[in-house]
Length: 220
Image (cartoon, rainbow, N blue to C red; front, side, top):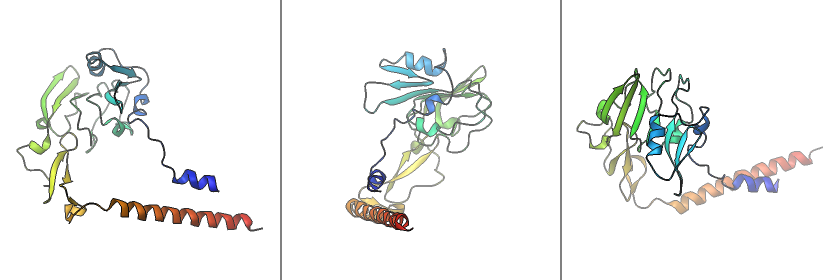
């Protein structure tokens, strides 16, 4: 039981964001796709499955994701892993809708290629340029929604500032030294106290489980 407790308390190794979604569609980058063109124009990139990576940096960044012609009726569940992408191709798929928040966190996305029936997420005003080509719609140049002239649906509370969080999406970040619910608490966040309480709680639960299992093992 001792080794089990040690494994339980150790943090799990982190994975490279976006690695799983690269295999959500078989084959390599499609020749002529906007992702393949983008990667070919940038030095230091390397393709892996349907992904284009920026190598030689730490951490390595997923720059492009090509999911064109993958028979997708819905967005893949692991799409959020690719939030660092600058180029995303979803053309030639029978997609009928893009759920709200599909591109939450995609603040670096600058070129999104969609099937023609779909509109650009956030609306045309969220992008510098929206064009059509054949059966595809291109949404180019994501704008900062915090700088929009229109009033946001949920204005940020006092002691916070607006920050972009994807096409047409924003988040409110507390200004230092404020934190907590609606940024009403002032002062430094008690990191040591929080970690101490969390650690003590985890250790107590682990000891409780160990004691329970030990009594069961001794019972005839």
